Length: 410
Image (cartoon, rainbow, N blue to C red; front, side, top):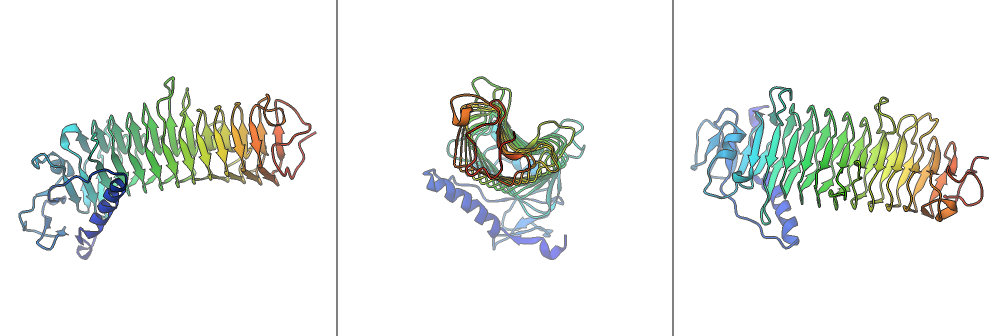
């Protein structure tokens, strides 16, 4: 990077920090005080000068600032019990570990700051590991880095109030971002791509988290996955909102697991062309295996041959005002909405130009038109196989779409 670009003010970084603090002030939470910034530069020569500028080309230390040549050294530095406020200059840095006794660090990277686990993930080392960090009054922030070549890009365990934001996370051998037993945290405005398993995964009792405004694409497995194997399910009350999830090998967004992730919300997401790996059966844009989930105003667009827009394999879920369009490629299947469990409610959804049916319901019961689910004011238009089909009931009176705009098959 040119030297003229390396002298950058802290102002932009502080604006991001203030916005985060303001969010929690609105929620009635106090803003903690922080020590003076620590500066990290891979040549160890950056400084904070008297006009509050971070000078990444400095060969002197002024104004009493402390400069480090690694992020880990700054994390480990004793600031008298206060949280670290760390500014990282452009450069390439090795993996970092943040644990409970390190405080609640705010770590901001200038453009060109890279965290690269040197061994390409072969030795099981995560690029960023956060473990046991939790406070009711403070938070940890990791902002503005390129993060690559770890086992997981960012692995957060047994923690709370962790903000992973505005990072480019790619080419890790397992997940891009993984939360385990982690609550009240944000994964926000990141690009997460080209990782060897899931893009973003929550599991093992991770609750009340927000996954928002990320672009998650071209990961080997699912884009965003909440995976719950406990009975009763314990990864609950998470919100997945306003993400673009595209061209992932398995599901775009999956509320998954042997017991099914439950009581989560997905709203305003765009899932496009997921299920791209032809070796994975039954994949597509959205899958719900749990109960009590609410999906509102999401779009499922353009899966490849035979992939569904929305697949509902759990009971007691609500789908409202979602759009499934042009799923299934050249067919022969690929429904807009496929429902295989009972007790779900679908209201004001649209299924348009899908290769299979607009809506296919595989259940039977006392619900709409002899199914085990409730359908109200759903629209099916120009789907190749027909508007709707009740597989367990057979053809007959009572459509699941209004208007149907294509007959049920004979």
